[in-house]
Image (cartoon, rainbow over all chains, first blue to last red; front, side, top):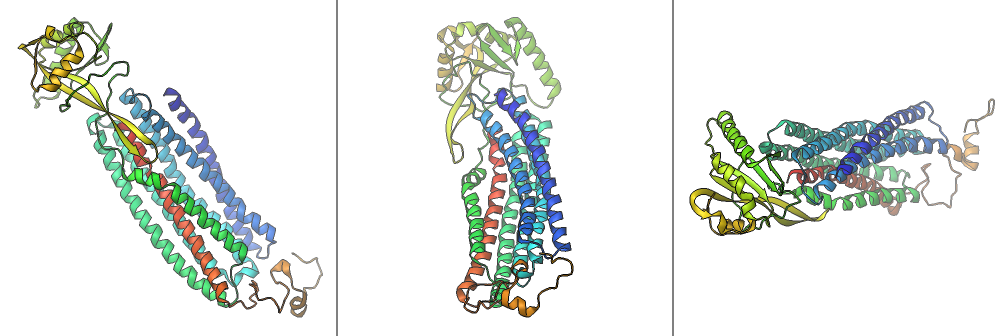
Amino acid sequence: MLMAIESVLEVAPWLGAVALAGAALAVVLGVVAALVALVRPTLRDTTRRVLSYLPAAAFSLFAVSLVAAVERARDGVIEVARGPRALPTADVALRFALNLSAQLEALSIGSILASIAGTAVVLGAVVPWMRAPDVRAGRAPLLAAGCGAVSLFAGVSLAMARYCSVVTLGFGAVANADASSRDELIDLALAEAATGLASARAFVLVVAILAAVAAIVLAVRAARRGVTVRAPGLVGAALVLAVGAAAFASTRAMSYDAEHPLEPAESSWFPGELVAPELARCDGASFAPTLRWVQDDVRLDNRRVTPEQATDDLVTLRRHWGVLHPREPFEGVVAVEADARAPLQEIAPWIRAAHAAGYSELSIESERVSERETRTLGTLERRARCAVSVALDDAGAPIAAFATWQDLARAAGAAEGLRLAP
Amino acid sequence: MIPPSGARRPSAKTLGRRGDPEHGFPRYDARRTEVTLSGAGDHEPTAVARSVAAVVMVLGGLALLALAALDWVGYSRFVASLLWR
C-alpha cells in the first residue's frame, strides 16, 4: 500500500513536468507556424505539413503526459481502496485525498494551458493551409470547422478546469473539516462539479451542431464552385470520426460509474488481524472511545493500556466530553473491537474497567461485507461498520454465561436490550 | 517554389498548358471530371456529398472526443467515492 502511495508521489510530478514542457512547446510551435504562414503565403507542401504537424505533436506529448499523470493518481487511489483491507487510518485517506486534489489542481491548470495550446495548434494547422493559394477558394468550410474545433476545445478545457478547481476546493475544505462532515462536503463538491460538466456537455452539442451547419452550408457552396474534398481528405475525416467514436465508446463505463458513485456508508476500520464477530443486526453508530482487544496488546483509542489505566483514561475522556459538549448528554458507550474467537473471560477485565469508569454500554464492533457491481472495476467488496449494543447492568446476565466474544455478540444481535453484569 | 533571381514568371497561357503544381495550379485536363482544387468544375452530387460528409465526420468526431474527455474527467467523482465509502 505504501508502495502505491510512494509511486504516485514519485511518478506524477515527472509526468506533470513533461506535460508542462509539451504545452509550452505546442504554444510556441503553433504561434510560429501561424506567423510563418502569414508572412510567407506560398509555402512548399512539405513545409506546410511540417508546420501543421509539429505543434500537434507537441500537444500530444502534453495531453498524453497529463492523462498519464491523472491516471496514475487514480490508479493509486483505486489500488489502496481495493486493497486487502480498508484504508488503515483516516490520515492515509486524507493524504490520498490531498494527493488526488493536487493532481486535479494540476489538471485544472493543464486544462487552461490546453485551451491556449490547442488554439495555437489549430491556428498553426489551419493558417498555413488557408494561406495556400489552392485552398483559398475553399477556405470558408475550413474556417468554420476550425472555429468549431477551437470553440469545442476551449469549452471542454475550461469546463475541465472548472470541474477540477471545484473538486480541489471541496477537497481542501475536507482536509480541515471534522471527520463527521467529510462525506457531506465531498458530496457537495462533487455534485457542484458534476453540474458544471453537464452544462459543458450541452455546450459541446450546441457548438458541434452550429459549426456543422455552418460548415455544411459553406462546403456545399464551395463544392458548387468546384472546390471539394478529395479521397485523402475523406479518409482523414473518417479517421477523426473513428478516433472520436472509439474514445466515446471507451469512456461509457466511466460515465456510468461517475453517475453511480458509491453510496454514503460508514467505512469499516475493523482491524484486519481480527476475525469480526457475526452480527444478526446492526445498531446505529455512535461516537465512542474504542477499545481494541488483541491478545497481549489492548489499546484504548490506539494507546496501549492495562485495565487500571483504561479506567483512568475513560474517566478523563468522560470529563472532557462534558467540557467539549456541554449541551449533549453523555452516552457512556465504549466501542470494543475484539476477535470473535476470544474467550470472554480474557476481555472481562476491560469490560469491568469501563463499568468502573461510569460507562453503561458496550458497542460490539464488527463489519458487514457486501458486494457492489461497477463497470470499470468489476465487483467491489465493501466493508461497512456494523455494531450491536449491550447494556452494562449488575442485574444482567453474568459474563460466565458466554464462552466467547462471538457468543456475546450472537446473543446481543438476537435480543435487543441484552444486559451484561460485569 | 521561389523562382531564381531574374527568372520570369510563366505567363497565364503557359501555366494553363503545363500548369504549376508547385503553386497549386494543376495542368488543365479537359477529360478530367474529378475534383481539382483549382476550381475546374466539379458539380456532381457525389462530390458535394463527399464534402458534406467530410465536414460532418470531422466535427462529429471532435464532438465525440470532447464528450469523451468530459466523461473521463468526471470519472474522478467515482474514484473519490472509493476513498471514504
